[in-house]
Length: 136
Image 1 (cartoon, one colour):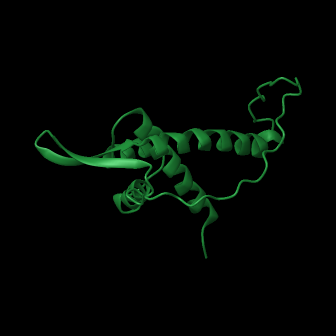
Image 2: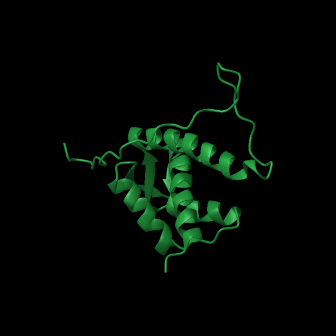
């Protein structure tokens, strides 16, 4: 049976990786340490396949670098990765606010034009196929 907590957590790990890769070069071991600072223990066996999947999806680009005499793989966000992160931030904020609203923990809605403070739900979007690097 699938663990919905783990599935959700790993989704947030993907977003967290996109976030850090958009800010600076990302090294896997540093990401493991970052997650540990947040109280989450994640092994390389779990983290590296996520990084590789993000690269295969075109959201990260990796390169090897020699640092202190060691060859390390560094990941950076691609333009597609930054666009995905921007979109995810909006979606996460909307979902988290809705889920936390009843507990009084939601952030106040930003006012837009109408002054009502709440946005209308966005229409459902069709899923677009993910473009793979080198596919045209």
